[in-house]
Structure formats: structure tokens, C-alpha cells
Image 1 (cartoon, rainbow, N blue to C red):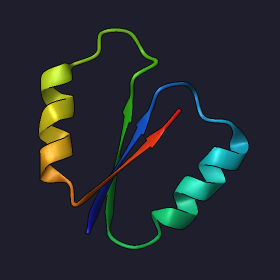
Image 2: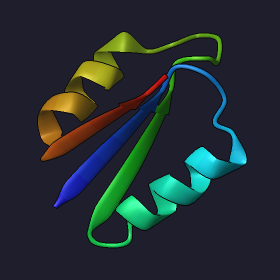
Image 3: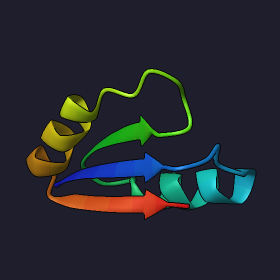
Image 4: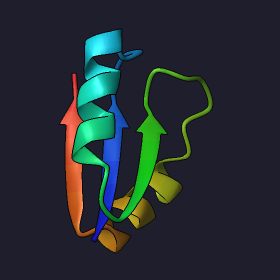
Length: 57
């Protein structure tokens, strides 16, 4: 199962621990919306190629 984690802001240490726990099985990817030069085409492709998408605000 492929999981995509989308971060709106830089994750705090507790969020990082939760992501690691939730991502222990299968393939995982991350997309950081808080960085400059966001490639939205890549984001859409990542969303549709993932089995599960988790957004972190």
C-alpha cells in the first residue's frame, strides 16, 4: 500500500513520530507544501498514484 503524506507546514517532532508509525508498512512518500516552487502537477500525480493520502496541517 502506498501512502502519501502532505505537509502544509513543517512538521513538529510529534508529527514526525506519528508519520513514522503510520508508515511502517509499504511504500511512503512526502509532499511539502511549505517549500517554495511547488510542482502541483507532481502533487496531483502523487495523489492519484497513492492508495492512501494523509494531510498534515
